[in-house]
Length: 304
Image 1 (cartoon, rainbow, N blue to C red):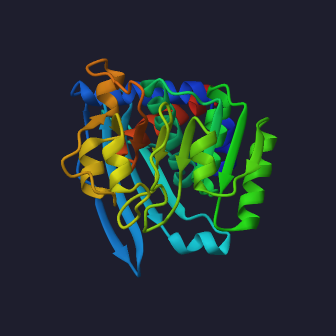
Image 2: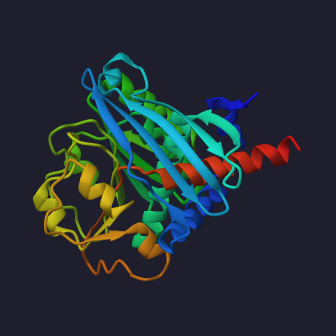
């Protein structure tokens, strides 16, 4: 029988530094032609997004994820993302392990965002959060384990949701505050995570030099960063350039996007100078394969 790893067990298995390294290795392999990234299938069902993603990374396996996005769940206190990931043996196609797709998605997204921080040479001393849902929580968790984070500011449409998030961040050992508005977050924070389901830009003011903006709201019609802010960035990094151009709600027409894998491979550098940087993430299957393979490896080691 195929073993399924639920959320709580999966979270206990994770070493965040090792997870980030697995994601880094997978992205570099993909860049070097040691992986396959088939087009993903997606459809809207009653206004909610469903996706089927399949990917292959040499030495890690084949991953298949069924995932959905229900934006309306945010107002009900329910997770907006649900899914299941199955890892298959690359040699004979045998299913190896199934796992909770929601937590895996959150962790691998945050791991890739952490790599964008490293690639941009950004500071995480003071973190800002626009949106206080599950993705924000995973970013706070992973960043608190990887980087030196002294302080955090957050804003959200729901006060109870915001307070719960702030208390969670405090439990991670970070001094946390409720911000009055987006301007305060942009002015006080060195790295800002935008994790919303907004269909209108939430970041419309240009950050000061040195700020790194992480936008993980996707896919269409979610829009988090205005066109003038995009145009003013010294460097725009995409988790996957083609996926971002096809699936992000923001308008990237005519702008140069650097693929995160290109930066990690050393082919290019993000030259921000005195400007600010932006990382746009829509998620793609290579990240799922990397995270699923890492979970599988740790699970086998602990149950061998």
